[in-house]
Image 1 (spheres, one colour):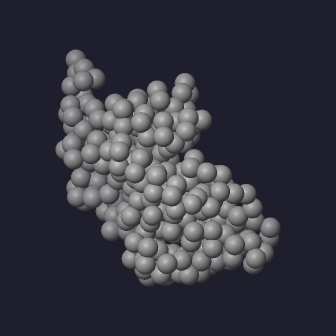
Image 2 (cartoon, rainbow, N blue to C red):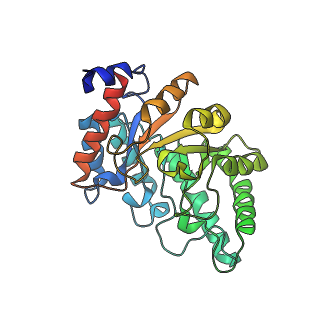
Image 3 (cartoon, helix red, strand yellow):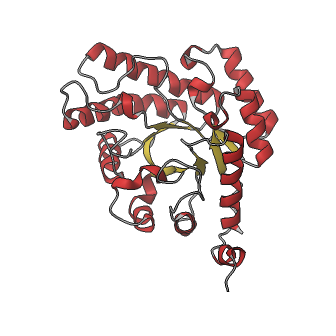
Length: 290
């Protein structure tokens, strides 16, 4: 009889991606403050923390320079990298990138430009994951095609600013139940190519691959050059290892491509608590690495 331990050993992967390039999203540890989130992430074994800006402040763009330097020093003191920022536009309220109301659209893109500067100051060379489904979906009679065009237009405007700041913006394909604009890597790549900037690329989020028709290995072969980051979670948003997503296949595919980016655990189910699920995810992914 093959034991679970022997089975996992047979799936063992080269260890360079895990845990040395494994991060976790900061809101996993909410309502604890950001300082405690960093300490818990490092104590568990994560090498990086991906920041939800509203975890820093309800209006993160308003953070003064001194606070930005303080956050950067905190990350260094804890020995943590900050590879990316995500959930960008949930706070402050009232932002929307593809609304027909031009003034709101303009204010939202200006705010995103402010987040580019914030990311550059806290973690030079980091990524902005542009998910924010509620703030980019087609609403109020706007067609999906028009919303996609405004999204592309806005990214083209933002790209030179991101290039100057040394930040890369990643358009994230989202599951159809979360957003009706950009649901697949193919759709994301159309926008990336239309913008034509090295500061705009895409991301693979395992939770959001429900609209894809190809297995993950094929997706990485086809879109790998444009995938700069990955979010790891089960299809239902729970911790890796609690469902049936083929993480061993995913990690092997990344290794075949000699992927140099980060893998971030992004969870939507924190039961029984954030620290417990963060530890479970870390242990499961580490076992896969052997």
